[in-house]
Image 1 (tube, rainbow, N blue to C red):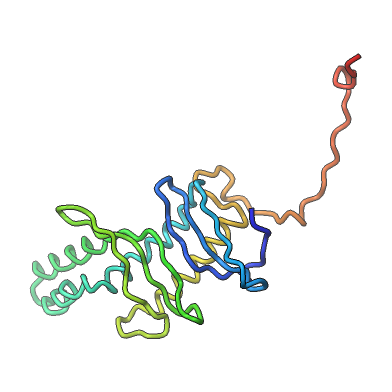
Image 2: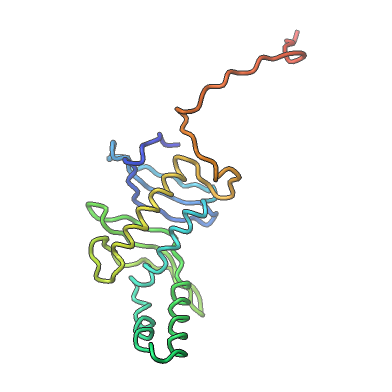
Amino acid sequence: MNKKIDFKNFDLKKVKLNSKGGVYVEWYDLENPNDLLTVNSESLVHEDLINKLNELKYIFAKSLGILDGWEFAREHNRKNEEALRKAIIGFEEQVSNCNVSGFVVVGNESDSIKITGSLASEIGTVGLTSPLIKFEDDDLGIGIVTNEIVKDFVKEAYLFIYKQKRGADLFSDLEVIDEEEMKVVPEPKRSGLNNLKAV
């Protein structure tokens, strides 16, 4: 396991879900930025981390341009309730057909991402990578929202790596206590037969 670093020094670079329900993560410690740190965990990820990735589905679909027709149909069918309803359903189906499996943070200032995932269709699934999505460039209207989702995701990734926030954990709702805060409990004294030594 990597040495524990403070959250302020946690610089996430890449995340990708693996086929076993775990996750592969790359990051830098800003106090020692020359060493790329990685973890490839088979531990189940917490649903909060999955939910943050799923929030990128709309961003993924929008960046690929597959929502343009549905948005046009929604905008131009406001007076026709049946056509508007079909446009809304088609829009939601297109977003749900997107599967986000991870992203890579790029740029000198970590100011953009590329989302990795797949798009399901009637004849199969195809793996795709989004075009570059810049946080400050809001041509598509998604940059600022993407930045907020990524910031929240970075917190979840940090909790997964350094605070052991995992999926299917009975104690995931409990507050995680730092090792420094834990008191050393002395080993209990042995009594009775446990005190006997082998002769």
